[in-house]
Amino acid sequence: MTTDLPARMLRLLSLLQTRREWSGGELAGRLGVTTRTVRRDIDRLRELDYPVEGTTGRAGGYRLAAGAAMPPLIFDDEEATATAVALRTAAGQLTGMEETTLRALAKLEQVLPARLRAQVAALQQSTATIEWERRVPRADPATLAALAAACRDREIVTFAYTTRTGHDAGRRVDPHHLVASGGLWYLLAHDRDRQDWRVFRLDRIADLTAARHRYAPRPVPGGDPAVYVAGKIASAPVRYRAIATVREPADEVRRRTRNLATRIQSDGPGRCTVDCSGDYLPGIVQILTGLDADYTLDADDAVRDHLRATARRALDGAG
Image (cartoon, rainbow, N blue to C red; front, side, top):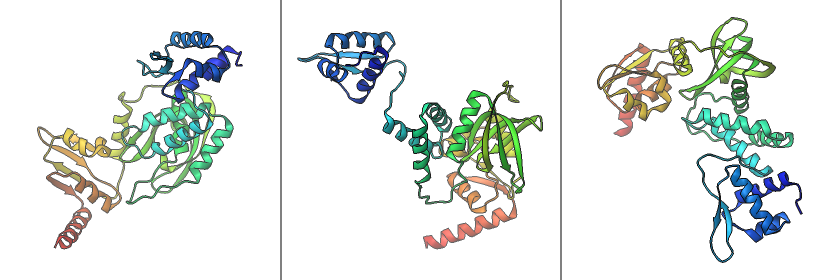
């Protein structure tokens, strides 16, 4: 018999979350109490805003219904491990839900027992994903999760950073926001040594360590982290320049190319410009093809030559 009230309530809540419906007798048997005690415990859950419904019928019973807000969930070890692995995987694959996924992962990993954190890490290290096309460098899920927690908790972090020129340097920063763009992850942080805002690509971060010290948050220049990071990305030096003027509204192009949202600017009614610049010629051509609209191109000669060669191969292949 479960005599400890808090333990019994948690056990009852866990049972209600594992099955669509329970009879009062079944719950009483699982908990080792009377059906009258079950009814009282159900009333306590309702007082805590858990939407427990009573069902009609010969036996009657209870079920946890959908409510106006999401109540706390209780996972067993296997469920917690599966959820953490799924969130870590989704963090690098979902488009449009990356930040939400990371917040959920940070909450879960904060309360995982050490033995389960080890299981999650082992599963993540021993699984792989087959990529059928060239992808941009993917940030380490553990780094994503740790930085998400540091941003949430306003905790100073240190890490080693490799610049685009290959130079390695140690950084000590106040992490403020994570921003996803074009399949890449960026950290917007205030650099303590340089006393200025900096944007870091997560795939170039290594040896991340939390300093266990808090910082006082400060306003982001311009107020919008995504706009600030987009401006820094756009002004960063690249090997090949390519600007497409597309004869379609910006919102329509964004709908088809969500990864390019920060690169698209309205250019009047029914027109927009798309910055396709980059360091990889086939990637630029892929972006231009994905626009699926008529456009004019202002680009370096190397981009134009590669685009012509690609078009000739496509025409030859089509016969």
